[in-house]
Image (cartoon, rainbow, N blue to C red; front, side, top):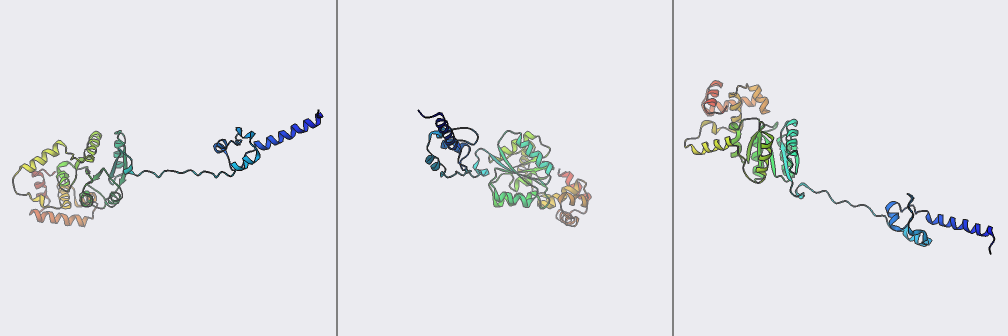
Length: 289
């Protein structure tokens, strides 16, 4: 029988050996250490206590695994999501439209543009179910932007949004290729319905606009003088007839006073009118204001 001192020494030696086997390898931590059967530095001991020292050395050579991430999906890769581009030069209007669409409950990916050039850049870079386009933009007319969109991407539906009444620009917008026309005074539900409608490839017409179109198609007469005006000339006509001076009209059109004065001169010449008073009477008589 071994002396007690010898037995006690052997016990301490065994404890030290067990303690050495419990010490984890510095390259294996957390969940990886648990999978490998090595003692975790967080205090959880696994079945490796009974394994020999050379087993631990083999485990320490297991290469670490690097996390891999799938690439983010683009707009067109996310199913059942409408991609909407909002083009308006007022940030508060864009934010309001975004909020209305977010509350509709329909999954949408929305981008914004505050001018015609930025709008065309987004149109060329993305895939869109619908473009909501304001008539008045800082760098160019919304109808000019509409024409360029339809020239380069004829299948993209464009819904015109404007502070102006339908009688002023709706028919011109539709003739230029718009899928619908809606005013900023419309109810949020009407805006959401209009976007859904044009995104499905259909036209969106209010009752008043449909009636105006029917009237214009049903009347058999020569083209009225104002129908020969360009979009900018027509806009100048409407603004002056509504009582705005050249300075106010230039500010709203985002043009110089000199340029607006040139448009006014062209309007008077084409329509054979002498001054603003005759121009205003003509606009009132033909329901332009």
